[in-house]
Amino acid sequence: MDEKARALTAAKSAAGFHAADMVEDDMVIGLGTGSTVFYMIERLSGRIRDGLKVSGIPTSYQTAMRAREYGIPLTTLDDYPVVDLAIDGADEVDPFLNLIKGRGAAMTREKCVAAAAFRFIVVVDEQKIVPQLSAPVPVEILPFALTPALAQLRGLGCRPVVREGIKKDGPVITDNGNFIVDCSFAEIAKPLEVEDAIDRIPGIVESGLFCEFADKTTVIVGHEKKCRIINSTDIVP
Image (cartoon, rainbow, N blue to C red):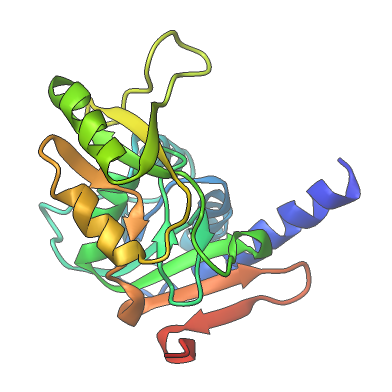
């Protein structure tokens, strides 16, 4: 492992461990999806072995499988429609705590869990902190509505591309049985307006823009030696 990769791994580990240490006894927590969340699950597993009692709501099959492997008790939003804490990663975070998520194609369930949570903890490394959102926005679409939805997405000024699998032929299929389309915009100057416009297109299930959770969001930015914490109170109007 080269020095850059080692530093990135250390940063992700630091952020994930810090988030796991925020979990308190008897909490119901949302378990996000992604590489940084993996370190949180690893640390949380150790705390459970030491006596911590929690229940986790996984946001993907991958997370559910990993949580079971690490001995984390699982539950559902049916049993706990209100969640104490949701912990997840992000692909980009802007200065107003708007997020782009969905590289792992799990953003629909991630958004459901984040909406149900009192607090939303986002774990990232420094390279995910950006002055303005610019990454492709993942969008989950019903296969039935793909063609008209793509046309309307183009009308919003983006270039939508159906995401294809790496180890399978054809499109990526989400845990909900839908397609993922990655939408590249020239710029995303007003992310909330873009999120609203995408959500109004029939056949679209959810987008990877998370713009309505800033008031309850804490971002943990991992570094090798010490994490940096960003809260909604740090947002400059």
